Length: 46
Image (cartoon, rainbow, N blue to C red; front, side, top):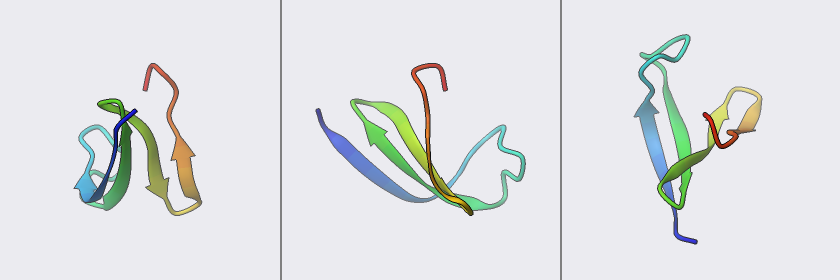
């Protein structure tokens, strides 16, 4: 499975879309988002 880390991404629909986050993509899907509390895993729906 291919993975990619995107740095300083602004997420549309996030509580604060102006704040940049780091996003981990695995297999073309968002696997996790780095937030103030650490890395937040994302399920298959989100």
